[in-house]
Length: 512
Image 1 (cartoon, rainbow, N blue to C red):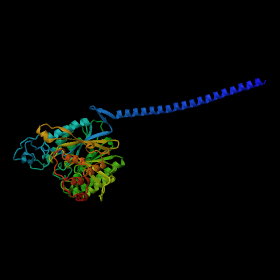
Image 2 (image 1 turned 30 degrees about the horizontal axis):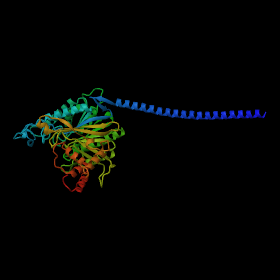
Image 3 (image 1 turned 180 degrees about the horizontal axis):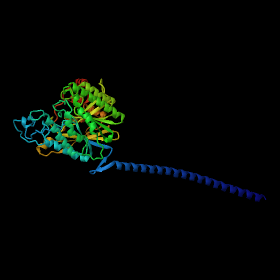
Image 4 (image 1 turned 90 degrees about the vertical axis):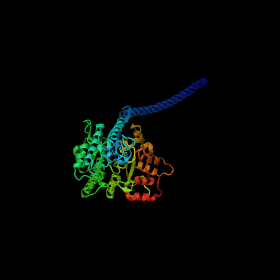
């Protein structure tokens, strides 16, 4: 019995041990199963994330494919539009290719002939018809590649000195009509926005005393502004009624660009010029235009639109003689609007008149010390001229505008070496420079802070890269004229006469 009892106990003990091992094995298996499930779960999550990333990447790429089209074999981003800025054509129908510069290249003034012919223009004279047409052809060729959306033509279509016994105001209108027609024939399917310059008037700096002159201008310009040859399904920049309402009052108007996101305000800054005789009628019109400008800015603000301002003579200082371009009261009002109250609206300003490749800043307050980046400000891009009358090569620009944030990105400038074109009877337009490459910056936008940065670099003691590029570009690769570095620095930086004088007095060493 004892033996039997012992064996039973051993047998029960063995079974217990086996069960324990089985239990441990099951626990280990359960742990492995749990770990495997966790691993599978983690892998599933990772795979799901990867699939989502692939889908998003594909959709993004698909969208980019939709937003990027091929035109002439080149990729075009639909979020960027491009436009041409051209100015100071100064077409002279009396230009003679055999007449020297000292006679303004006009046989009516000459008593001798030049020892070489200059078919496409001569330094020191205005533009012959061959230069006008060749410039427009070059713009047309570049525009086909760049897919240009519109053109800014910022004044002085007619040549200098047309108010003579052999010309007269009617010749000014004829010149404007001829340039306008030639531009329209080359760009029939995009708007062209012309501006009144000081040589586009019945007399030099003589504003018209009635609407008749503006009616004549509108005869030439309405087809360009309203894009009379554009496709019928294209939204026009403005209407004839809206255009006439302001233009017949003083040669200024507004238009819609960038798919309606930006309001283009085309001003007649001659009304604010110190060169104009300000009789009571002109004074009234000058104030009316400023009132109109403020109203347009208010409307743009209410509608959530940005604004681009365009005109001929800029506010600020003429660096040739240190004098103001505008009367101070108009400068104060204008700058308080565009560089202070509505600075957040103003994408850019495009002016001309100086015939130089240049820039201007407009600070909203008189400086008492160093200007900081945070001070509200606006900026002006001054276009070089087509006319070589002021010792420059002909040039024009193609500007890039980003339509999501409504900011300028860059511009590319093209020019003709007039000396070489004359010597070899072969006009060739070529790339001059691209702004972002010539003036590199961490700021990827072309805005007031970028121009402020460029201005500061002009007097950088440890690097003259910006200065060398800037001073040689002023005449668009022609021989630089005598200059003062600090006069140019102060002229770019200051819009108010008192600030410019104070800046100039701070730097005593002449030259540069």
